[in-house]
Length: 119
Image (cartoon, rainbow, N blue to C red; front, side, top):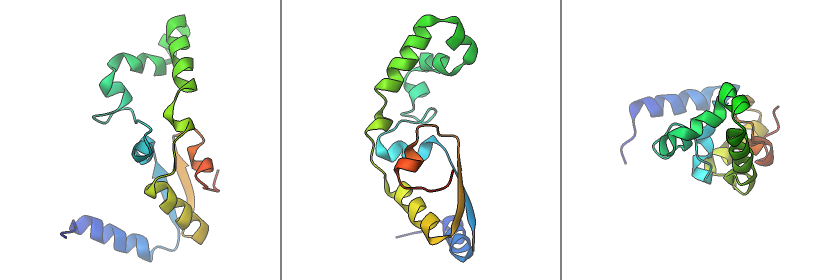
């Protein structure tokens, strides 16, 4: 198997680090069946009109957008998703003390349900 030299270098640096801060976004959960926004299978890519639900002006101005946004939250895959290998690796690193904190833009509570301790 061939390994990308940059990934090998990054893995070595990560392995030698005493403390690490991890930045994550929606992409970490796609393997668990939770779509992100901009990837080829993302929410906005498959349905560009869906982006209107995430624009405050559209959300406030249009009752139909609000109704659709709330409906989508009720039936979102995040409520049933299971942790994937990426989530489990972060939990293990955090519990070992190597990961100091996890910074994320996610608001679905997945991180806490996956077992991460940091706020």
